[in-house]
Length: 178
Image (cartoon, rainbow, N blue to C red; front, side):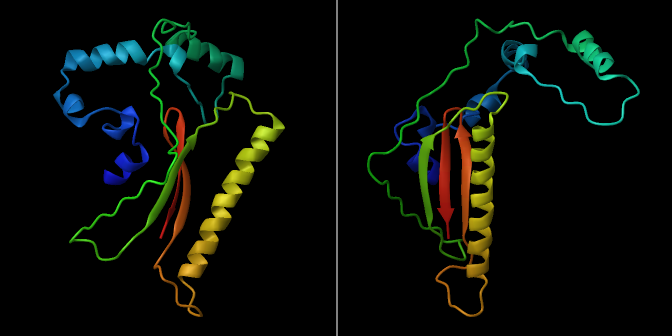
C-alpha cells in the first residue's frame, strides 16, 4: 500500500485503487451494485470471444451474438468513463519501510509513464513495438534470474525482476525489483 501511494503521489489514486475504496465497495447495497452494472456494463463496452468448433458458420454465430446481446448501440455515449490524471514525478520519490515479519530485504525502483493507447487494430510499427517490449521484458527477466542463481558469482540479491504494467486507465508502471 505504501509503495502504491508513493508511485501515485499527486493523483486521485494515491488514496484509492482504480477499482474504488474498500469501505464503499463492501457497504454497497444490492440496488447500488445493480445501478452500477446497468450504467457501465452496456453492450457497447463489451467484447464477446468465441473459441471452439462450431457447426454454424461465422455469419450464423455472429447473428446469434447480436440476437442475444444486441448490436452494441452506444447506450452509454452520455456516460463518459471518468479518467483521473496521473503525474510523472519531477524528482525521485523515496520510501523506506520495515516489516518485522519480512525474512529478507527488497528494493523496488518504480516509475510512472503515460500509457500509450493503441487502436483496436495495430499497424506494423505498433505491433513491432509491442513485440520488442515483450521480448525485452522476457530477456531481461531471464538474465536477472540467471544472475541471481549463478553459483560462480555472489550476488547481493536473491532474485530480481522487471515489469511494465498498466496500473490505471492512463498510466503504466515500470518496476525493477531485487
